[in-house]
Each structure stands twice: as structure tokens, then as C-alpha cells.
Length: 195
Image (tube, rainbow, N blue to C red; front, side, top):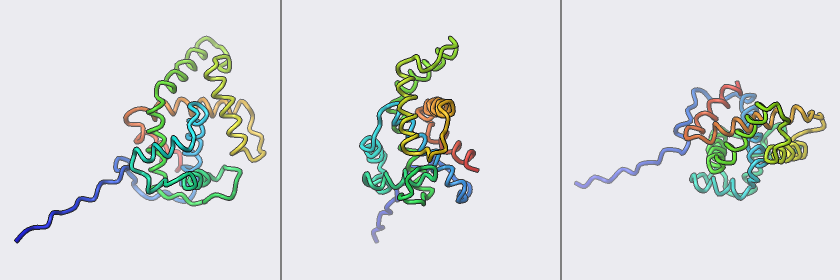
């Protein structure tokens, strides 16, 4: 009698992103907003667009989660802070995990640029010089501010100082997320901040 070989189901790509209990609706909203802001930071710094995001999804075998530009747009539109109300409002845990992996893949690909920007930030801070004076940081902050106001700011008039602070925090966070254990760091940060 021949035994039939067992087909192993591959482990999901987010097997290293544990979840103790399913996030509540409010926590998921916070996670959605944070993921979209991190992607916005990557866009502003490295000029990343939907093609690069889709390629990262393909590289990570996540095409079933992020199939095309429309599905990517819907995932990003799930951010409750966005101006547009036409997007899908639901983001499930697996989609959040997929976005974590995509973000970290992109951050890893642009690690040198992120590291250079953070080093410039440290240098400008030590010299007590305005960060806008460094071309790389000035361009990043301007682009971030423009994209944020275009997509997120619903007329609440976020001050330029608040936007600068948010953009610089995201930049520093991106350095951590570009590391080999970046996905775990980001996932744990999301679960902690979202609760």
C-alpha cells in the first residue's frame, strides 16, 4: 500500500507577526491610519509609487492580497483620516500584516537613503541648524507636507511644525523598519500604539 504524500500548506508570509487577540475596531482604525502614514513617508522620501508597492507585493508572494492598483488604492483608502470617503472602510488583520511586510520590504530597498536622511537629521540637530537647510531633508519635508495636505488634512489645518514633527518621526521609524527584523518591530509597534 502506497502512502500518498502530504502536501504541506506553505506558512503565511506573516508567520513571524504574532497576534494574541484580534484587534478591536478602534485599534484597527489606528493601525490603518499608521500604515498609510508610513507609506506616505516612504513616498515622500524615495518617490515610491504604486508600481513599486505592487512589485514589493509580488516579491513577497502577496499578490492575492494586493492584486492591482485598485486593490492597493482600496487598502490605503481604508485609512479613516483620508479626505476621500469613497474607499473601502474595512481592513482585516491579514491585509494589515501584508502592508507591514510591503512597507518593510520597500524600506529595506531604500535603507541607504533612509540612513543618509537620518544621519543628516542628526547632524543638523547637533549643529542646531534648521533641517530644511539640508536639500534631502527639505525636499522630503516639502513633499510630505504637500502629499499630506492633498490626501489627509481635512481642513483641520495641521500646522507646518506638526507636519514637520510627524515627517521626521516617520523618517526615524523607517530606519528601524528597514532592518532585518523590521516587520516584527513595525507589527509590535502597531499593536502597542493601536490599543
